[in-house]
Image (cartoon, helix red, strand yellow):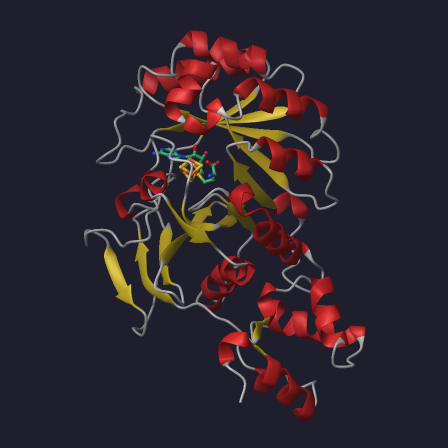
Length: 362
Ligand code: SAH
Ligand code: SF4
């Protein structure tokens, strides 16, 4: 009997890798389409449910491969409807996903790594350091696990790769996951509804600019001069602000429409009107939109959130300069589900906690 660890986790395969894999035991191309639909459209978790495949074929698949799944350990809900899902991975590591309702949208925020190596000083995930990359299946199974327990009238409309980790530091697995999110036989999300947020790793951005795959790009800018950005985000010493923006101008404009720039506002560090004016100058020539995110404070983070007037003033300067600037009030703060608060553990019980096997009735 084969060691089950050697079996292939089929959700780690891209559509073309699946075709190739099935080809090794003589199966036709259309079989891959059937399998993709079973996994990602119908959400099956066992080969036995795949009724348009012969018993023999299912048995063959079972011999060489398996279907991985994720179940939430805890689900917490904040007063604003935001839900945080805590998952325990096979190796005991923990990750989180956040579901954010907003008017007509239901956005799922996914993790791409356990922890993060980049250590931005305002981010709790950064404080954990990097444990490991997520596999493609672990990224995708977050969607499947959340979708499985949605109410009948709910459906996920948008995906953002803004949870734990730096998606471009886990380049291959993340891109494969995005391919499946978009694929017509898999999740079928339009590329406009998938957003990847990155600090701007230059080599990976250059590589990305040459890929055919399309999605929305968000770059975490967070400062308007090199010194301040390096203070907040040590990675800026390696990949400085100016070079990232130069690359945005040259490479990234087509076919990706506007780039979103995220700007975490920190009191006394990057919230002055001078910063706003500098930001306007920096983004000149790049079709862009700015998301202003007032810092989510947390114990262990040596910064304070800005005064509301400062945020307003900053936004007005950008808008007067012709930029679209939106203030993003982070949701789910009391369950530590807001930007930068994900650490792979549940909060301290102020919010309601549901166990995995309890009747979940939101
Ligand atoms: N690593 C990627 C994606 C995950 S972080 C990135 O950095 O872009 C997602 C967003 O949360 C980033 O824009 C980041 O700047 C922001 N963020 C991190 N910590 C935060 C905090 N304490 N308050 C508000 N936003 C924060
Ligand atoms: Fe990593 Fe993003 Fe947090 Fe920085 S802000 S430490 S890149 S997760």
